[in-house]
Length: 64
Image (cartoon, rainbow, N blue to C red; front, side):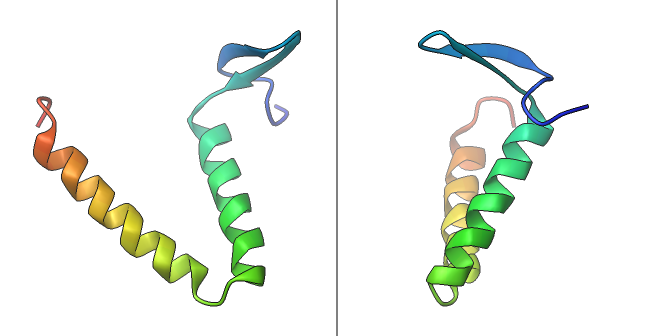
């Protein structure tokens, strides 16, 4: 399986891209990795922010 060739299909202009959970996770990890090389402690800052957002989503979710 190749990155971007599995999952729900989306179109950007005439270019198609398939996105699934693994695609999203791989993309997020790649972005964090690159930003970590440019911004000290970026991973810790992003993790803390994501945790707060996650808590708010769970608190306000009707599916909990």
